[in-house]
Length: 251
Image (tube, rainbow, N blue to C red; front, top):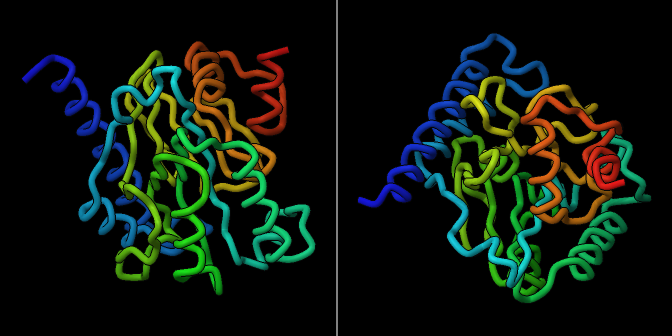
């Protein structure tokens, strides 16, 4: 076993342990996390057992193509517009704009990483999965979210080249992609997550890639890495959203 392989295995074990501890704590709590009941976290724990944990494949960041990231599209979900103040008249308009932003951002050679919660309501079905399959991107990977699962923890999504429970991306600092933000992480890591939608940014090693934070458009991984480096050093750029923080760094 090479040192590179050993490091990847160790990283995955650390990441799985941290995520499991977070989910178990919420599943054991009387009120879950205050927003979702215990059943949601039990389903996520079942998915953590059933789905592989991954490290970002070697060569994904070789400069020949781009890795893009976004989360919590909630395709077909009318109520999410009101819940998170999305700037769309209805779900049809929202879905159309999200697909358009995808098409004008991601190329055929690129990788697109979803950090959970793809579709709800009428959008859960083959029409959506087919559209995902045929949209731009050589590789479409999903880190599973709570709305991508049934109550028993079974998958209710399709159309992706790979579906995993979590994803690690080595680097300085290493990144841990989970749908739900972790309360505790391995030291030195930055957690890239969704789930919390338009919740304010925090003074912690977390990067929210819910679409509300990134202007409803996939975000390039190198820009996420730049923000992660700042956060890991205890620097919290100005801004009320992930995108504003990145632009503050770049200005």
